[in-house]
Amino acid sequence: MTLAKLNQELVVKALDWAYDKALNGLPGTDTAEELAESYLRKAKSIDEAADSLIRWQVSKSATSGFLTGLGGIVTLPVAIPANLASVLYVQMRMIAAIAHMGGYDLRDDKVKTFVYMCFCGNGVKDIIKDIGIVLGQKLTKAAIEKISGSVITKINQKVGFRLLTKFGSKGVVNLGKMVPLAGGLIGGTADGVSTVAIGKVAKKMFIQNGNDDFAVPLNA
Image (cartoon, rainbow, N blue to C red):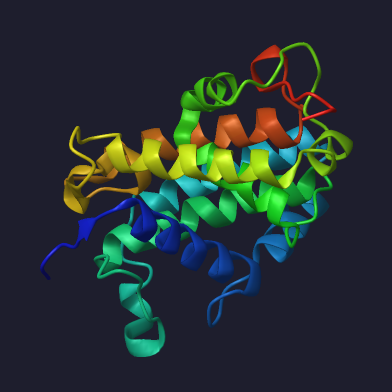
């Protein structure tokens, strides 16, 4: 397959596709909410459930043939190869499941924005600083609710641009170069490493309610 040339709009479309599939499910798969509940039932705490979820998703992301196995049932976005889209979907569902474990409403557009932020890994704190969020308050459901629409728009723009330029300096990059972002055309090791990093950020954001790095001003 010829890899698509990516721009910021297509990055967002790919994320939106993965988020929709994570929330509504694919044939024969659990939704993010169902996945979260299954891990919560088997664990003694939310922390334990999240850690277990992350461990199992690492093995899934390293085997990037998930969507290929579904054949023509899945329509992939922006000409993304199936193995790359598989990892994007697995990681998106993992983040969304962790957010559900923390009690967040996955159908809230503001929550969706913070789910997308997790793909930036440790770059989350840079995005927060770039848009002028004041440190010193924890990220909570109430704090997210009070963030203005204009701030959410700025965050979405920052996330799209950061993911787009993560492995390119000219604003248009070959999707195959974006290995640590959402998967591997080169090998499963990078997939596993990125999944762990993204999972840890999601857990810190949605379950541990952040810290000074993920602080949000109530008057944003």
